[in-house]
Length: 479
Length: 100
Image 1 (cartoon, each protein chain N blue to C red):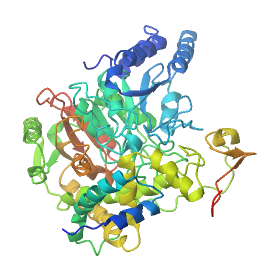
Image 2 (image 1 turned 120 degrees about the horizontal axis):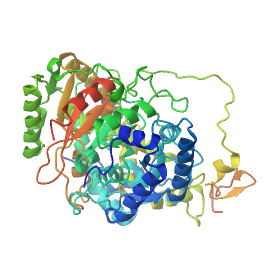
Image 3 (image 1 turned 90 degrees about the vertical axis):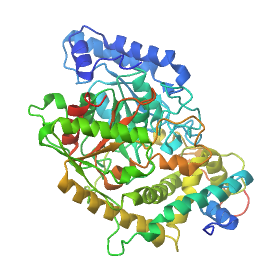
């Protein structure tokens, strides 16, 4: 099933040498999308535009003109990225017919390097979820077992990569939405440091937690994509300065060696709520790292158990604020017959938002309301400070922290939809990185019961390059 | 544990959130929202009084730009394309008070 595409650097060589045409790559991508419709991963296809762009790139190459690092290479984006060629739905009834007036910065940067957007992928509506079941349109299926979920919220993007619909895809990660589906679908999912990649043109979920990142079939590809999409953007005031050197691992001369590294593991935290087979899988990987010369250190982040409750306060609070812009007037679904403005708002919003969005808006409104603000929202922000202090302390002892990406294996479609809290618990291992803003990656580990499992590595804030280097060192050793 | 939200609280929250809920939704939220609130109430025990709240992890404050016009190349038409009820470049809204 896996990797019907060569690596991005091989593709680059093939296209730029004229051995393979950009048109043939786009056609291959579109054929895969059409042949694998039953997985319901794709919302819309950019066929005509993509082929026309590919023709232009082929012409440039045959003329001997300079082309970008991703010239002619197809990619897929989660449908919460604004695009000017295709509708941007966020898989919601609210934005079902929304035509964006501008495009996301990350897509513009990829296109500048010659990459070609071929399709937009399914997600939990507004990225609220961990299974892609909250999409208002359709449920994406896990290619390893069609009765199971692909994870979420970037489920469509992960399925697109593992099924070879494109060599890479973009996703967003607010509490694990890139890493979790990457884990469930057996691909690499990279969550950069907060602010390293512009959020401009991405449908906002929780603005202090949202990041943009790639889903790929190997670590080198993720590093190249990060190199292209990262950096300060005047359209996103939360962006941070990137490294001056390239993140592309293939351009790095002197790589880290495992022998010099200290690896932290949260043994205590893994005691509760983690599937025993997944735990074993993590310990096997840790043993392997040890045999390669790494020093393994048992660490503790005392407040880590508070990270999920804090996340499920801060995240809905920001969601309720961000989703208040949907008034049915300027864009988004609107009702036709109402008596007055107030009713216009509530009836437009009640149809446009699905149940999970409503749930989160309600919780967010509650924790932000006067009388509860200090007890919930402010306290969660203070816990966030505590977690930052503790993680900084932990990274004084170790270079990286490793563990499972998810506490559970890919679950059955419908298994958790009746119990929202159970669905939230799937984020147990991933929300910490978002709350404290550090980079984290999910790598495919050895499968369990023929289902993919992710191995997560976290690194200090802004040390994305080091993290990618380490991930590259271990990617083949843990499979 | 005592329920944090009554049925009336849920209806009030819905009103504040500009949502009109169906009877089924009110019924489901009565259980679900209380379960979620129970879960997040784990924070009650956290000892964090002496810590400043974090609302932004990058430590950036007051990111400013020059106070000048920037042309991003968007046309007025494209920015208004999604408006539900447009009249001469104005957005027409329903009556605010009373019935329209």
